[in-house]
Length: 366
Ligand code: SF4
Image (cartoon, rainbow, N blue to C red; front, top):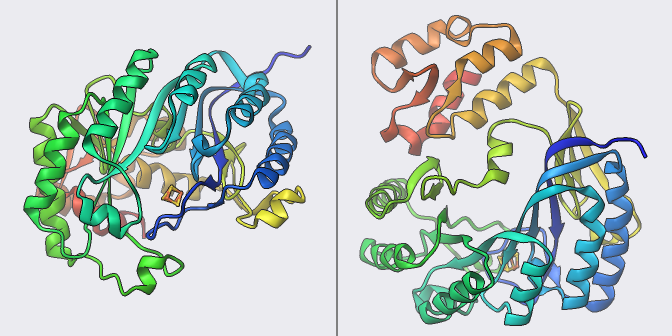
């Protein structure tokens, strides 16, 4: 047997959900046994494109991967076994309706990290986004994961609901930070035109409020021990998301499933979002050939999202170009003005300017 090439990460998309949330713009469909059966068959065929690879990190996202039955989950994990290294780090996304037998099964199947869609504990906003949950339920669930030995847990927080007050956000932050979790991902609510909430006339937060809410989150979580290592992601030290760091460090990764993307051998692929096409094994939608210039663009755009910023030596080694010299005209005033900072060989945003990263990316990249 030929030796496999080890790659950093593989993303697997499971689009099925038991219920559809009113804000959702992800690639998802209602759970149906018949479609799951056909989907897993197609997924197995698509996976074959990675027969020569094994992956250090495997992330199963959705949709709701835990909407699959015990047998379907077992089937999925058997399918991905050939693509694992000896101790692959497997993360799975879960919703609060996961049952104890599924938690036990996930442990047996080798899951090491769980990302739990909590979003908010405010019942008014849970109703708005058509999800059910409560603080006591989530606390019990986390204890159940911990009992099985799954001790690396992320919870998602959404803010920016129509009419949300700062006090309501702080109440959520208090409850989120009190849970036994190691990682918190935050999202300002965005609704796509295809979502129910959009059609009900949802209005996004104005920019001033969004900035204030974001600053409140950063300050509150820092005091609670969760440091910001990426614009929207907070962790206890040592619990940063290994998988997502693959993306932000601009490394290659595989991706299978509906709407999944991948970056292998200097090509970024995006899969079809049409379930009909996917079930007919027409996987690709489009691909982008990553030229040297495009790769530089990704390198800067992704790494400036990280608290430590762009590794200047890595950039030089990779592109045979000094970024500080290449962009001197644009960089000099921003550095003089303390908006961008050079520290320990990295170029990073001033910590207060993360919220307006797009402004700096436009200056640096266009
Ligand atoms: S938000 Fe998550 S659980 Fe809700 S419909 Fe979308 S993918 Fe499914």
